[in-house]
Image 1 (spheres, helix red, strand yellow):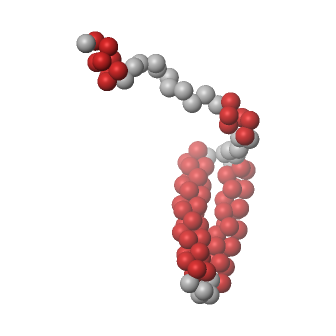
Image 2 (image 1 turned 45 degrees about the horizontal axis):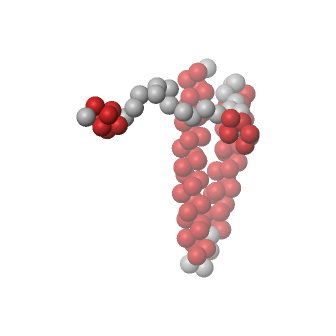
Image 3 (image 1 turned 180 degrees about the vertical axis):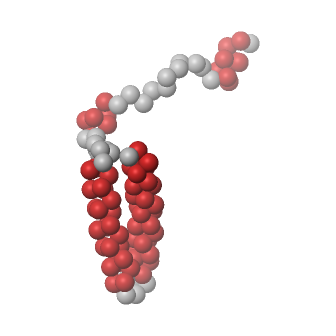
Length: 94
């Protein structure tokens, strides 16, 4: 089960990168006034496939909760240890 969940996560990660690449291609084609319908259809198909992968991941118990703004601001991003940097320690020792 855990291997299946990791495999789905890996597919989602890969698909996200492919979708970003497809979106960049579409932007380039739009900027050059070219037809981007084929790339757009591929992107839409990727989105449908992504929804299926996300549903499968959630069914297996791998649902990832997204934090709202308040929860993000409350997270503690401070360093675990409070050691001074070597440069600061060297200056004090002089």
